[in-house]
Length: 214
Image 1: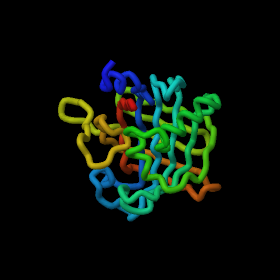
Image 2 (image 1 turned 120 degrees about the vertical axis):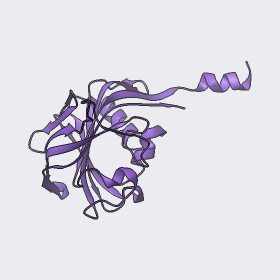
Image 3 (image 1 turned 180 degrees about the vertical axis):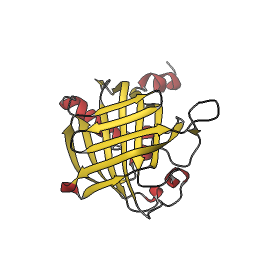
Image 4 (image 1 turned 90 degrees about the vertical axis):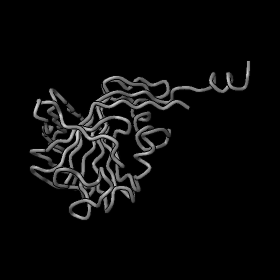
């Protein structure tokens, strides 16, 4: 066996994930962060929610689970120093929770690490019931007593969803984002200093796929 064959043989899939994204923030539409500009308010208050329809992280099956980041981004998104609270699907067992947090907080490398190396502080981790749905382009995120968000994508003349490609920043690298508006976006986490409510602000949705082989 050649050295090249040995190198290929040793490569393993660290994670392979497919699902939907629901994102809403305090910026007006469309979000300046995705094109590398400063947030409209000088800082950004956001939710970034992932649902995994089908996926594995290392040897752990995480299909059907959700993970939400509630984030305060203190300036330009690319400068990092995000403060986040991670809300993990309470249907996850201990191994699934550990795998989700490892992948989504940049510990396992790959495209997810490219995004979440921007996190400066994880203020807390909570196990919560998460209802995450994207149906016909319309997204809803509900965590009792904590998050309420509803959004609808913009559409072209033919009714197709308006998409954003090749932006300098993306929470779903490699997949097109659906440009949307959140009719409602409410967060209630006072114990972490994260409480806000907005109407008619920016939202992003996506049908995404990410894979990392190392």
